[in-house]
Length: 548
Ligand code: DHE
Image 1 (cartoon, rainbow, N blue to C red):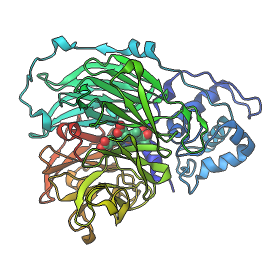
Image 2: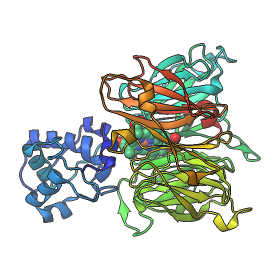
Image 3: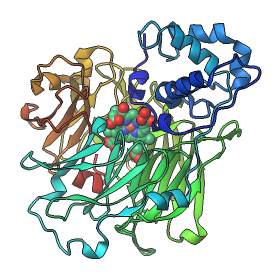
Image 4: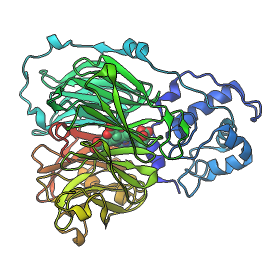
């Protein structure tokens, strides 16, 4: 069977379209130029997400020629065709590849990996556009929207975000962004939204405009996933809306930009040694980034080296980076309720690293279930364990609760204090809210449509009671028969309703479903032909204040 992660990779790397020089390895089976070109495209679309651009391995095994040549074509073909229990998809038997494709890919991965181009200051400046300069922007809010309750919804396959008024449920604007757009984050003031596409394009949207729209954009790399903005205000200065940061998968680097124009100021590469074996890694991708509330610092999580970088942005000319040893394959994460501890999933290590943002050190490495995937996680107060942060898992059905209060609940702090049973594996996101008594857990990558189309809800005061199932996709009332996945709970500003995406294929109807948090009843369904492949959604207020 195909592992859930394979579906998760669908969409492919934007590097597939980049020109690359491909040389033949004299020891490898021969290939024509046309075969190379076809295989390279397939590799970036299907394989690079797990095995890496340079095939050094990440969630998938390394596939460098020293390894693949020793295995040989016949051996490799079996793996590609039938997959493995460790998570390799069965490309032939699933019907995605035919026999020729399998043979082609088995020969291709014995060649030297081609390297995509670098992307430095000149390339960034070449793509940087200030569409509306700061002095021409509104001096005050020029619309009647309650902008704190606007949702920025990712329209993944149309390369846009939908800005939706959370009060009226009307679409405010559909804004053009990067390819296979990924996440939105807000500035510290809540006025600006920053959106990153998988192609490394960052868009900056001004919510004070009569019709909120792009005011600046830039490409910070050829492939990327994360963006955030400076949030520190204190004795070392007021950095509200001053800086933005984006992290790239390729080239492996992060860039700090001016918060009002996206002018790139400082680029820092992440190539280097891994945390455990201390081996050189040529493409450590930048995963989640958050802004510290304690210090003028960005917290940058580097996937393949397993390091968390505390980047002090107070003096970019004498950049101080504290390198905290964490665990490999850092991915997504969020703050605990006090916003002192950043909880980040080291997904293939089955651990959550706890970063103390006040002391700039690792507070703990907590063993959890198989492939934790929290999004930003969910915080709530447990009757016994006190404040906890929680994560679901891609690889099993459990939800892990980790105590986060080292003062009043010391014995539970930074330990997995409970494992609760969920609907099934394939969970991506879960959410609660300080005003809610519920915890919502999605399972969009579960192979059973019943589970991928519904969510589990728990009463946080009575977790032993088990969960209630909300049939979100059914409530959306979409009748065109396509595959649907229900993804990412997100609360509104008041914390009394929860939004979900019903994510259908690009050519099929999708919807957003809004649930009343008190009654767990359907409150609204938002349908519009412009809502193409909605996935993540980000409430301005909750994102601005890191409430989850
Ligand atoms: Fe994401 C967050 C990377 C696939 C929806 N995703 C993140 C973060 C990273 C990441 C590093 C953390 C960003 C941060 O906090 O700064 N995502 C990746 C991948 O590498 C991966 C596995 C494969 C890929 O090809 O991109 C991937 N992600 C997906 C999807 O298929 C999802 C479900 C749908 C989509 O829109 O593409 C998806 N990822 C999200 C969302 C968040 C996210 C909604 C933010 C969650 C939040 O609450 O903050």
